[in-house]
Length: 181
Image (tube, rainbow, N blue to C red; front, side, top):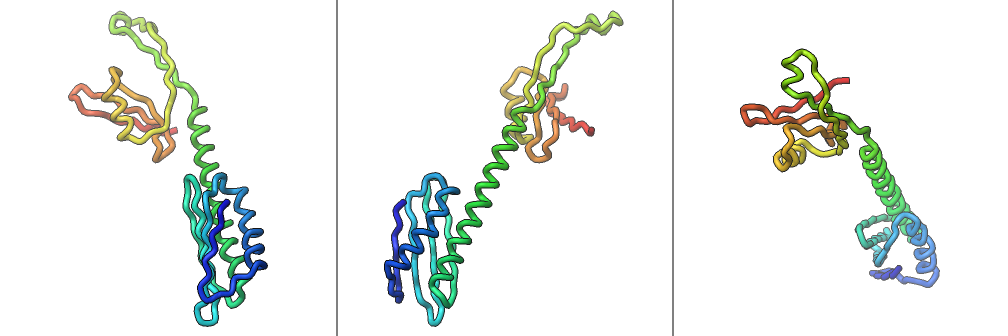
């Protein structure tokens, strides 16, 4: 972790550097690959202003704090970064959990009947297949349906988290079925 210090109108002592490094070390548990950190200290009239910018492999985050005491300003800026990191990690875990739940969605089996069996009065199943329900938007489902030879696609609507069926109509348009449970 590379820390760059910039001081404007502030005497930057070793104690302040050590305090800042100690407080910034808390962020390592939230951010995996921190490339560099820039800490700017500035005095504006009677307030100390601390800007902290953290650049990582997949993220950039920043915080700013003002206080009459430099140590308190440092603490507030790093606390704000800590809150941002905690929220980001929670959001990321939530997305992973939703993706895992979507991946573990139940398989739906489809039975195909022959026209002859329906007209003879005794329908019989001639083909059984299993469909994995994947989360996607309606537009993505339309693209999937265009690429496939099937007449329908069953998917988990990403906007509503409900199972939908998109099918080709005889007039070459598409129909959408949203079952209510």
